[in-house]
Image (tube, rainbow, N blue to C red; front, side, top):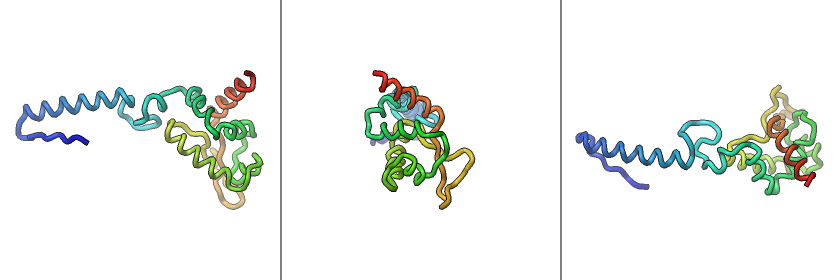
Length: 150
């Protein structure tokens, strides 16, 4: 990491330092987009600034894709991770592993696959229930139909 040495008592030195810093900020913005919070902030444009359909097309080539399609095709009813295991016919705790993989992709692409149930419901044991984000569900189903159609 480079260091910027500035004599704060010298106005000319301060101006030169500010020019250098502005150049660095502009260069960083070209790489990541505007400096602001929220999804995609600090994420390279290739991943975080793409439309949802293109992001999911990139994810389609990963092992998680068939599971996302199965979740999208299941009813929109909120379920806990254990209930998702049962509904999808997965081995016990497989959905926990899938949720962890989803979290990595969510962070990388700045999106969400599963969100806590809007009604805040929990299962019999007290685990929170999750539902697929409606917009993501629609796009996953559309891409799955394209895939099946040829």
